[in-house]
Image (tube, rainbow, N blue to C red):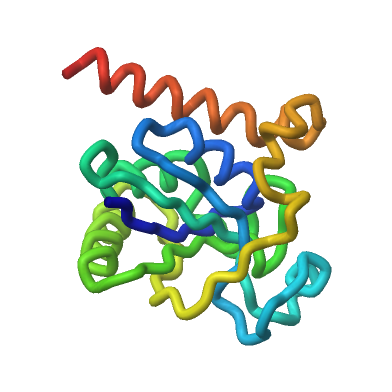
Amino acid sequence: MTDRATFGGGCFWCTEAAMQVLEGVESVTSGYAGGHVDDPTYEAVCSGETGHAEVVQVEFDPGVLSYDELLETFFGTHDPTQRNRQGPDVGTQYRSIVLYHDEEQRTTAAAYIDALDEEYDDDVVTELEPLEQFWPAEEYHQDYFEKNPSDAYCQRHAQPKVEKVRQRFETKAEGT
């Protein structure tokens, strides 16, 4: 049995690549959520007019990987204190957001965000909202890092996140 989680933390290529390396992740789909337009396109989302964020929807096995571990990965691979930007990507579509699927995810994410707020000098600006609708992104965005490992953007921004996740979970596995 699998569960789903939805996160936005900047460019979905980077978040997707980081989540895909986790044991227990069955699939990661890049897409759009949190906006007010049905079936948005990448161009429309990039305009900032639809209200959507670039997000990933993660299907995972909770018997192998917990929602807390997904939150740890998500918050460990972006800066939750940056409003409407991550690295070179600027705009509301790049905001930090957790879109919860049920009350348990909401409670867990809210507690995680509250704890993080104590760790940072700046306020954590990650939004916490119920997932109302997830729209998969166009096919060329799916598995982008895997399909384009030599892409300069991927090398500069996605690769370090992937390596950080691999290191963190290898270290964790060694400690158990």
